[in-house]
Image 1 (cartoon, rainbow, N blue to C red):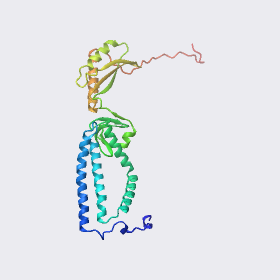
Image 2 (cartoon, helix red, strand yellow):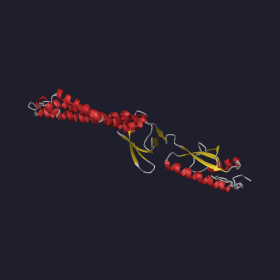
Image 3 (cartoon, helix red, strand yellow):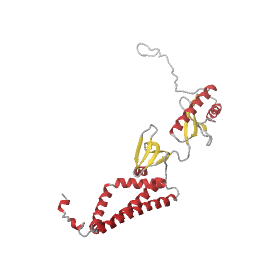
Length: 286
């Protein structure tokens, strides 16, 4: 209804009466040349950006494609007058369309910009294990709108790039190793020095536990039914490496403590039963 109230004269936008075959050929040549320039600019920008240290491949592709699209758009704007289009109305329409597209696609533009920022800053790369909010998984790709991760249970999750910038990102693969904590409780009365020696020997030399940094073992607390020993050990960063390393450490500690006849404590309680006092029929204790 709004546009029906605005009189539009097509002749104010395009006048094909004076367009000749030469004009059409010229317009087509301009568009063709713009395509060639866009192709060359795409390659040059990509080559130049490849020399920028730390800029991911995806960011180079996005910037080079944007440059190519911009060159083609300029070529089309130059060619339109040869086809009878009036420059000022066309530019006005393009401006209105651009404003409408901007507001309609603002979330997409924000995510695209966020994607460029993420790829330029490089907080993670493809194959890295990251944690973002409630999501934990391996990065599959980062495109113009989302970062795609694969969770440990095999689910594919697409996280908007703008969301990635608004909350902390933990890169669990950045250092090349991760630390796992394993706790074991020994019974009260245990020779703690001997227990620590046994646990240390149990976690040293395991093929899934890294030697550098070395495992750290110590007493951390007195608990209700046990004295707690804590083991810090390092392994490769993937979720499967963590699972297998933890399994190997627990098995080795359990086997070593049993062989050394050291009791692995478990919750237990002593119950004292008292005989009730004899009472007089009148309620008076005898």
